[in-house]
Image (cartoon, rainbow, N blue to C red):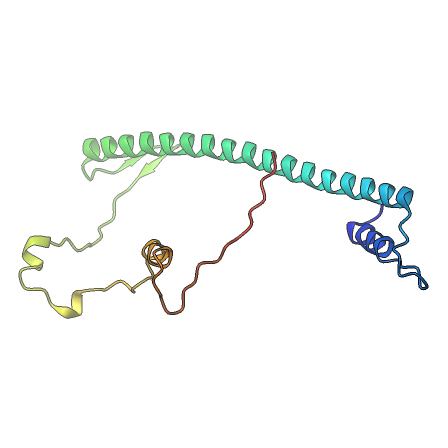
Amino acid sequence: MRALYEINADLEQILTQVDEETGELLIDPVALDALTLERTEKLEGMALLVKNWAAEAAAIKAEEDALKERRQRLEKHSARLTQRLQDVLAGEKLETPRVAVTWRKSKSVEIDEAVFWENPAEAFIRYKEPEVNKTAVTAALKDGGIVPGAKLVEKLNMTIK
């Protein structure tokens, strides 16, 4: 099976053959038809492979979604039962041959936002880095505005059905 670039090269060679004396194109219609058919079959095979891989990826994605939903449901059940166990044990240890429930102390900071923001200390405030609002830039460019460092790029997107 020949590669697409080889078929394209042969097509270009056929389409560029010129009679030296008359300057007339010398096209062999049978060879041209055969190469065109071979190229079409090659491209069709490539497109079918893309469709196949896209369908397989979609099936895997659907399975991922189902597994994610199942995982989240189990995590919620586990969290509810963990909370119930914490409420019932209330710091009491539980140890059996199959399970051990122990407790450890930890520290965390709780902030009363209303009180904190009445007199905020700069050392305790974190600011987010600015980012470009591409939606606003797109709207401005479409309205004929100029945004330094930005341009609208028209793309050609292929669809395979």
